[in-house]
Length: 205
Image (cartoon, rainbow, N blue to C red; front, side, top):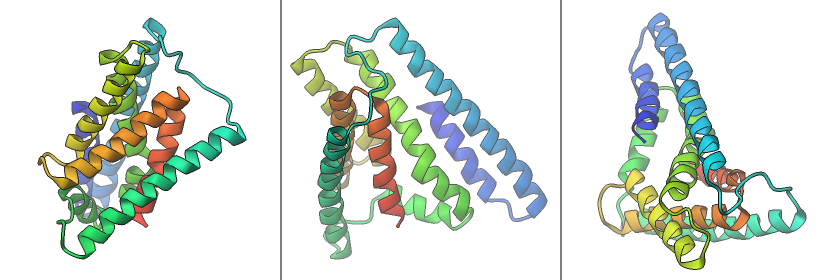
């Protein structure tokens, strides 16, 4: 988690430079760092599965049934996001701090920050919060263990985006639980990554 936050923070540092030459240099270093960290986390996840993989996580063939199920889960996320947005627009809830930070960073490097938020952040967060975390602490394949894994992963995801124990944290945690359920259900992290990408794309739009 630390190296992920460090790598993503390097993009914020790059955005603080106004001189074009310095910006390009720091941005290049930042993108290289992000690629190295992503490669390391992906390798660590794969290595973990070779050591112990009682749920038989791997790559499963995309079928019409699986895609339909993924769309249904995304529809549930749309409902959560719609209710959440309504609560923020009507000032019942404050805009989450995480979203405020994203809005601010996007103004500095809109292309790279949007690409990171839509594509790279979901890969990082799924590998860490779902893959590594769930497989390390909840690596037994039974109903109780899977339920605990989903709840714990959701709460970690919630705290990653909102450190306050409030309604926004609960909503982030609910999204995390849906992503964790997707990972457990399909036994393939690509499905939770795809769902996370669609969710972030929706948020950016």
